[in-house]
Image (spheres, rainbow, N blue to C red):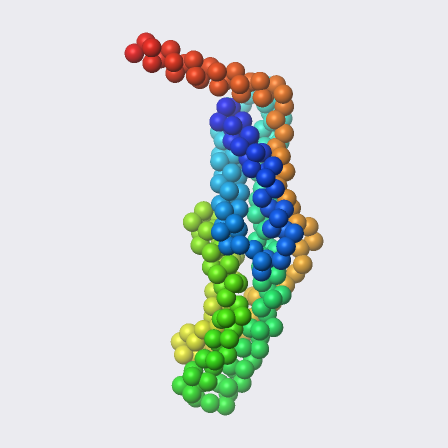
Amino acid sequence: MLPLITAVHNYNEYVKLNPVKSLLEIHASQWKILILNETYSELVNHHRTIAKLADDVEKRNYTSIKIQTFIQNVKHQTSEIENVISSLLQKQLSEFSASSATKLESLYVTTTDNLTLFDRRVVIPMMKPMIKKNHEQLKHWTELLNNTRLTLNTLNSPLEPHIHNVYQAFIQLTSQTNQYATYAIDGKKSLKVIKQLRVTPKHMSEPKLIPISEDLRILSELLTEYAYLYRFTSSKSV
């Protein structure tokens, strides 16, 4: 019980800092990459730790109603943490789509039009100026998507495959992969992936405190004291 109560307490202290609120209040194009990565990392790690400890405690089949209620509250809240992470990513991708879809479609249309008129070898140098301009205009989004993709991949988040697909679609449209051999078909699919993200989130979830009753708070203090005394007496006996 003690590790779980401690983990919940640590999470509550983190939530009190309002880590997500400031991100939800501004456009994703203004997000600082390091702050975003840290927020994803904190939320995913808190979720993973609490969920695992809650499962471990639940397997012990405590008969106390207060402990059972606490476990149910914790397990419900772990689902809420998942919703918070999902909301954050949804806002990021939605605003990325709204900011970039028109530019990417223009790049796609210009490229495919040129490919119908000229040999691919001619189109490659023709498109370089427009590609460079797009890279400059969308530089922040490129870095934001890539960093989020790498962060969620490192954390083994189930959301990583989604942003990975979005990032790959973005890169496919803004590169000359295979010297445009399959650009027309692949680009159409990539554009569809990015356009589909342009849906304004109806509800943005913010992290909430996980309630700890006074009885459990006192219990955690007793358990902490017991653990200290046990270590002390054990070391004395040795």
